[in-house]
Amino acid sequence: MVPLSVLDLSPVTTATPGSVALRNSLDLARLADRLGFRRYWVAEHHNLANIASSAPEIMIGQIAAVTSHLRVGSGGVMLPNHAPLMVAERFKVLEALFPGRIDLGLGRAPGTDPVTSYALRVRQDPREGDDFLERFQELLLLERQGFPDSHPFRNVRAVPADVKLPPIWLLGSSGYSAELAAAVGMGFAFAHHFADYDAASAMLSYRAHFKPSATLDEPYAILGTAVIVADNDAEAERIAASADLHYVRRAKGEYLPLASPEEAAAYSYTPVDRERLARQRTRLVVGGIDKVMSRLRAFIEATRADELMITTMVYDHAARKHSYELLAQAFGLVPQS
Image (tube, rainbow, N blue to C red; front, side):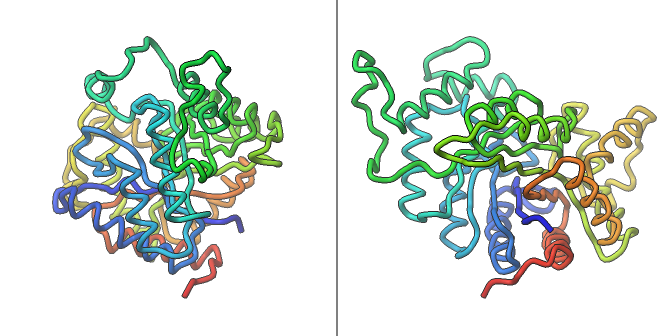
């Protein structure tokens, strides 16, 4: 089987405030480290009542400090929110402290609503439209000291200067990032857990058009997908009720803390809600381990994924940990001492 990794959004629930959600992330990371997962990536979202993960660089350092084997990274840093020099310096610091264990995943979206996005960027150079590619190129030029002699950034160095940036991954939920990752010869991670775009199309296109680079000789594609596993199908469906209600509310612009399965089961879903849920269930894998593994094998075969990155948004932290334990056993992960 392919390697298995974790994408953690630090879910906030009606019983678990953000401060506890962040500590739960440290607890889950320790478990993933012991179970033999490959990576542990944390997200960047802002002004959302259901997600506590707003500062991935801080969480990466904390998680790397309490684990020993995992690669720890961002899934991702939303580059439009940050000056490229700051991103370079923060991740060089992390790489210096935890050499060979850090990943820098970059995303195009702001990870929030337009007003909050403006609040994040109001003191930066106001650029119109999608400036991800401009910022991405600036980040690479800073790392490679590639600015021409006449450029004002020619002598700017991201410190510590003796440390290289960790591996850069481009994240995406459409074909654009797949094409860009292929063109520049970098790793690619596709967000199947919320993408409307076909995962197989994006990942196969990335592989077909990949150009080797000094960074990467061959394409490497990670499939990010949402999974909820329990001891049997019925229990998994009970737990997944929280995720179902979360999706329905999100579709209406309601970003509330995750509700309990009991509250979710009592919710009055409209016919439109149920249509949306049916579409969402094509992206969310729910069930006992046999049912889940059947679908995951099909995903791997269709997308030719080199690695699976699992995100599990459920109400109960113990249930979330157990879901990852069941996956680790099914994938034959080797426990670490």
